[in-house]
Length: 419
Image (cartoon, rainbow, N blue to C red; front, side):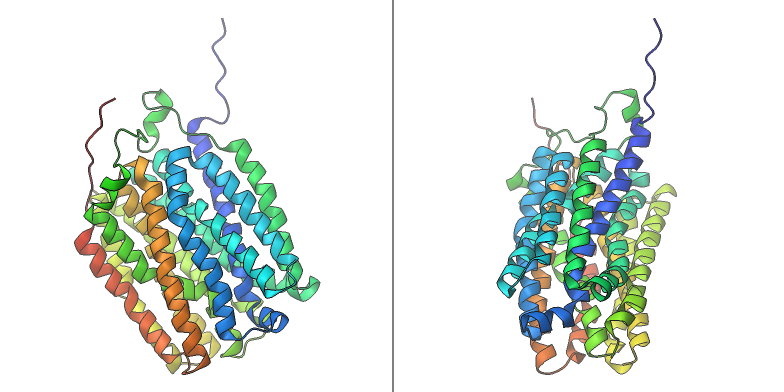
């Protein structure tokens, strides 16, 4: 009898294919959410909005996003990354399509809310994929590669959305990404599989076990100090990244004088810098691990080092030229993504694999809640006192989050539950 042929898509190869599809999904996830920020002046004119009205539109998305993030994490831990990521992509792509046909502010707000309901599925699903498919010495790099899709999405959103709007009207900027997202959902359905069961030869090089016996129950999870440290860290630091996503393109047009076409040419620069900073810092933290540093300590050092540069944001009002703003937010963006990329790996290094989806989902809900509160502050100040105080507030958030993280987060070990 001939030995069974080895399939081309072995577990070692499949994990990189899966990572590539996750990367593409993250690109679309961020393109979809960035559409309104790139088109801010256009949509304000189309729907008769001021800055407070625009803030309300953003908060519809952020409120739904925050409300559904924890549930998305639980669903990922309960049903796995495969199904939840698929349904999430289908729903958020459909919501993006819906935006193209909105005739009123209420209709547009509905579809942005639906986008907020579905998009949180991607991040706990992505983290669970990285945790169960990759060992600790590759985990931060793998996480940064697929998470980098989010900022690649932010990079290409400005030129792509601006080009579609200028050439084909603002409706096309919603229509095209929605169609592409539905096609990608089909690709995910075809390629995703869970890794081999622990004990099979191919599983030796895989990541952590997702054995539900080696996990905290939901009530136990909330009693861990590290969970609260991670939640507070994201609640404090996430508003800076949300500002970059939802307010910076409009600020550059309305306060710094760039046109929509110029946003397409230059608005991607801070997001490219953010991506490079996030991936580079993740590779650096993995290098520390390979050199013998304890994984959680390596992540903490990386995050604390990045937070040192966050106060540069306060200089923005002193240098009003648009390219000075782009330069400052290139640094700020790198700080933000260093935090988002490595904080996910902190979760993977701190909690059992069977809990990472839930923890990251809860953390995302707290981060989005902090951003929603900050959005109200931003919208009020933009319409009344100007933007100077906003940048001072943004400057101190990452250093505060670094202090919280350093003193609260540690490795959490549950008791193994008997079968």
